[in-house]
Image 1 (tube, chains in turn red, purple):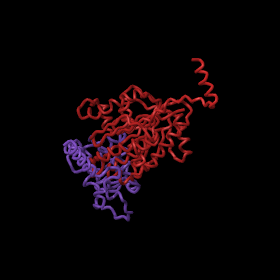
Image 2: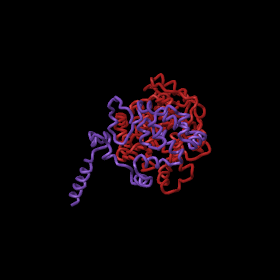
Image 3: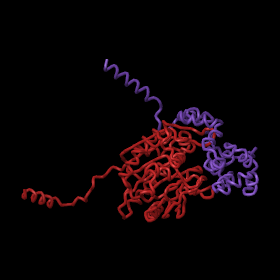
Image 4: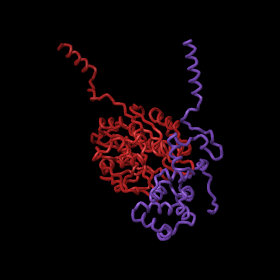
Length: 306
Length: 165
């Protein structure tokens, strides 16, 4: 049986991608950001997921204003890197897991989450920057990636509650997949930022810290945030934090926060990052269900042997 | 000026300095955004830079005169007002070879240096930037505790001090 073992959230600021691509990681400004992900890379290398589901948003790359799917799941075998206007980022091709992706699609659609399915889709910095932050810059991504693109460009994005419940449905889908796979779910974007209008540059660290605290301990509270409150408090583009709730919905109610990092700014954005692990259930070898009498006999035998 | 329209009151219009890209704006700005989208291709970027007005007239005749003017004059807030979306208009900025913070500086009426400094100092505060009408000026957030705990912490510290004394 496949299972979700952990969730990761991370900002996906395009300038982070540009800093990587232009080898500027060692500049003090960027060092401050990248240092925060060193332990995360170690964690990822140890965790070795078999598949990652990456929840992100497209930034007018694969989808323009011609088609605006609220939830678009990538069911393809490969996802080319989008040319966002400066040529495609020099990162490895993203390889999918069509079998698990179709299984998820089938399961969650029957659970009444009407996904759009994409058999051809390019992916942009929204997806590739978090991969870099967690995996570094390998020649090939170490595992298949299932992209889940969420519309946060045209208002309204799906509600936080809807996202949280979709996460739950994804978990159910993963757990009904027959192959033994370790799955990590990424929620990307955020944290507070506004990049449009006269209010651009808005950062609300108090809100961000409260969001991180609640993400671990009381995510239900976050599902009640209205878009209005999210946009007012975390910036017009900060509303994309609803995507983190898909990740959180896919985890256990109670999780262990194994790492957290927060810094301001990366370009125009507050960078937030958290790693949450499902509590490891003691490796249950299905305990032999013995009738009491049988158990007593067993104890007796052991004693007599001694 | 754009013709006055009967528009439903939208709660998010109360957020200052913000143009929420909703279905109405998306409809108004469809061709503006599709023009920006066309700049994803190198040959289109070149054609546009060679003859901006000509490129627009030829490929996007549906643009309104206001939209056309906003594009040619690089009025980034006006573009948002007329239905542009920042992820799309950013492509125009990139076509000009500008980093994003140049656009942010234009939109906030600042210089790129001052805007970058603002970000380094922790960004624009939400206080004073919540509400046009003032109705939500002190709304705060349902997940952020009001500043009361601080005084509690102080009183705790004081009581600790007493104990020590």
